[in-house]
Image (cartoon, rainbow over all chains, first blue to last red; front, top):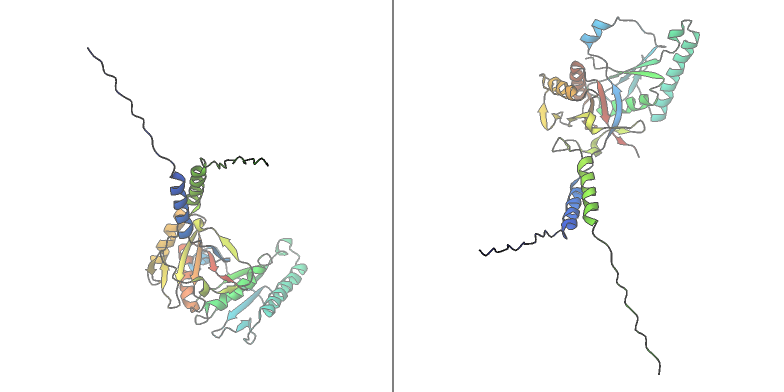
Length: 157
Length: 141
């Protein structure tokens, strides 16, 4: 019987263009990617009023312990019970620093060592009709002194 | 008679075998490091963000949720309009907080928006107990 040998065919995949294809894909990804960096001013909101009432007791704070910053509709700032007026960036910084130092002075007189490191509390209350930009501006300045002050953003109606 | 010598031409040969590998490595890097934005539209453009001088911190996209509030006081989360009058914001944020325990809620708000709109959303965030917020800003030049 005559046995015929099968001829083996060579399998050959052309790979010369692989690099070109990959580079085309890279160019596509690079040109369509849109970098979206998130950056902003970080703060922590207070607990919801109903939760807070369950867990805390109310205490009365004096002006030396708490500064109330009220942003008016026209962007003016009312500090505690003073007349509202416009504050420049440098004036705002000075005001915050003065208040922090006032609290530090009070701490020096404190006899209880646990209370000596209490920070000045800044309560930011914004008029509902005021611009969001004004609130962020004040919070941005306050966050500079985050280590020496507590910031509370009021959401109370 | 001068003898003219022919210069031997040297063959320049750049090995291109590894080009494909390099390209695929680059491709893999881009594919792995890309985080896709969940929303299809930037409802508030970056140049409408409020200004901040300092204290601008970066937020990881993997640990954040974005709330858009337009100047017309439309509230959008993941392209869906939400209302402060129902529980949709609370539900959406609680669902995200379950996925990401260190969730930070980023406000992308037009700087001229009335504070009331932002305050109402913040109250909803307090209800949802997702209280770490970031006010996205553009740096003052």
